[in-house]
Image (tube, rainbow over all chains, first blue to last red; front, top):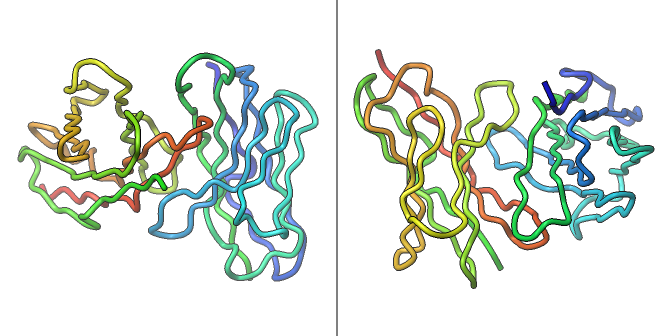
Length: 115
Length: 112
């Protein structure tokens, strides 16, 4: 089945130790999104890629970076995780470029714990 | 700016009872509206969406939602709740450029 995969599902890191979260998709979608969802809060968009074009939300901290080496993969890098970065990180994809709204498909998420 | 409000943080219903989750949005034009469900530790699953046309939309798992422009609402309903419906429910609006703006969510508990 075509899907959005996130690895790992659970990640524990130490305060200040860089961490990378991975997202891959078999849907061949050209748009990929990263959301941060803190406990009992709504998902918040961090940034998205439209093809290779990177689009950062205005309030996304510089501590968060992303890479998209090819259509299938997208990585979220947190350069120096703080306690406030503990959250669920959701990846989503969609087929952009068509008229109107295009449905986003979400992965299962990676829960990040910062010690 | 676009926004979504879900007034109820927690709702508890008995199994078999009817359910209505409220959602109000703020958007200048005709909105694209969505309801997502999130089970504990899981990602988001799309329940239903409204783009245009019939204001009563049917979704998966027996859910439906009604778009009311005059009230800026898009409430989610289910006539008979099952224990497996216990989850968190998010209403969302497309905020331009295919971006989703989510409400804060409503956590649903189901009593046997």
